[in-house]
Length: 401
Image 1: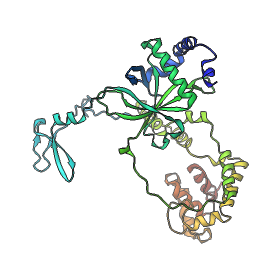
Image 2: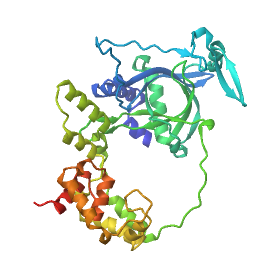
Image 3: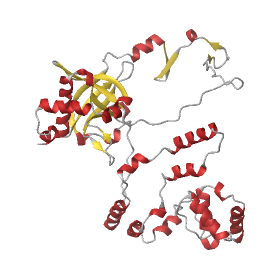
Image 4: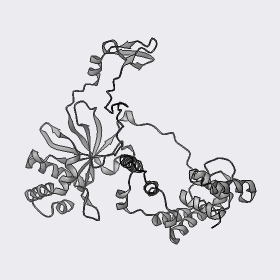
């Protein structure tokens, strides 16, 4: 039944035609083509040989700040960087022909030449994907995912049969919820990697844009040599049922909208390019604009409604009626230290005078959040909120209106 739904009640030939039309849609081409990494054969069987030509795409790729370029301070021309190697003891510069490498092995230093090293790294396997077999999708160890998955779709120029074979495999994997375990080697100079191919259906956002196309997602998995054992820890007591129910209500209240994840900007990138823009225009960067991007990644207590606040209180009450006092006694009240927090009524007049002086001199903004929270505790003020909230709270308490 699932297979008929995917085919839309059509024949294989009609479905193939539909898939070709889908592939030629500009929005899909716009999503995939700029991120194409390589074209490789997916070998499903060697005797008789069955293979599909597929392309690998990166649907997500970490955005990074490019490194700066060295310039001559007088001419502003690029500097050529030359790496030289020298003898560690004598400081004598060495030529490439005078340098050898070694690997530590069994307490010894095994010297190896470049020719020998190239033979060690050489593998007889061809580039591409080699199918090992299929497993149930729910048996995949998701915690072993080593990096962001790649997206796989058949190469359009490989012909109709190529697309038909891929579509049939994709549909059956989706129907049976099974994953293909393969060995991947996208290029000859890249070591092989164990991967899982997982079938995925098209998802669109609220604006109609394609979030994830139909096709296979290639998830890198570790070899047994890569897996590290974790020491076992004794299991603690189970929380009371009332606390579990309260946590369930708390999770429901703090549900995050999926589409909002795609609107979160990297504050480091944003700050980097904002400063470059300001410097190029001989201006000062707008600090308030920069803070707004950083604060978007921080929880906003002011946005909590009565239901959210009550859910938090119910959870704390279910865990321990004296939750706050016990946390403070253990040094876990948010100050970051392990010592006992001083009760508010022990705050001396000198402490308050010092905080007032900082407020009058406009130095509160230069303090860390933890320091501001300590000052709030000294003054008997709430410690929740962002840095700006803490500063305004202290000023309102100490400075005349």
